[in-house]
Length: 403
Length: 100
Image (cartoon, rainbow over all chains, first blue to last red; front, side):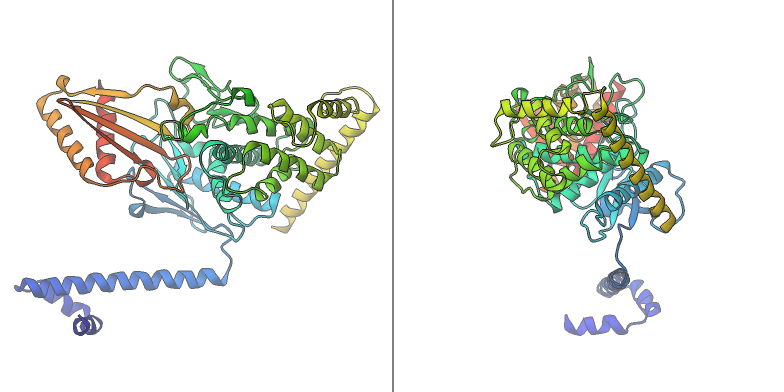
């Protein structure tokens, strides 16, 4: 073999082509193998060169969208749009491209995180996967979108919250690494809904009051009677129709759904029980008020980084309570909001008696928490919220000026 | 031959928990069509795929169950690692049930 590999390097292409049409089948085979090997080597050299270029400048979440052309074999997908390239004639491709960018920009602006891994990892997406595939998923490295069947679901590139949800699976994998089954899996799913929703809210500059708190409201075809895939504000109420039945998400631990840890059981109900921590986040954000990606988002993000593969709801709740104190102070509005939110979904922060928790959060309400609407304390709190919004706007202007 | 198939998991996992499996009965199909199905099932059974790649998230898996003369064969593959033959069978089934 070594003798023939020497020959691979020195036979010029035109001669190889002549050999390909030889009458001798062995000669033809050798020539063919040579051409294939050379092509492969050339390809590899090309790839290595582009890596060298990439190492020189940080990735910064460079986006590439591929078109699967309704196939299911990702390596066969064709390049449809690259970071510095022109817009595609394909709307799905452009929407996927835009969604990747919005999510990347959100993590950079809000958490100063450079792409999913914090080190500028490239963001790749594959559109038009399969035929009428009713789904979008994260395959461990990149996002894959189906077109929907046009009866139940439309194109999955349409919802920025779904895109944020999928990319957040990458963030979770590289931080806590929450195992994708049972409670840790439901928490994993909830992280994706929380940050997916925050991406949407941030892109629309919506406050917690203005946000719809729905995941995937644009996914269904117009004929389907459903608000969204999931509601963080009202788990269990996203849909109730003859085709789907009723939304099975619980909003309280007493309604935790026990499902088998199998494909059929949604791996212990990871997309079902996520309703409980989703509601806790919504309640936290509502109570604190203002932009949910600021205090609530920061508490949750720091708590995600402080969690591990086996973290369950209770431990995560305790962590959010602790992080809220670290970030905003003991007995701050933020910490009390977290305490009350988890209590409302049936999880008592460890070490704090339920009765004491209720008294403290009622006291916070009387002093102008989210429930109050009278008095000087409320006015000064509202001024505080306005000041925070002005600070946020000033930051945005600075960022725009810097571009 | 009776073919049932269902999808599990995915973004709409909670919805799918409540959906019944789809059924296709080949007795109702013309012979040439039934023959096509036979070939697709045989090809799908030969090629390996994966039930669930460990790092996939929100990926759906499909279980296709073929009942033929008392024997039952079930094939489960994830869309994150689906063989072309399985995808072809699935596409064929979806197309034919849409036509029914």
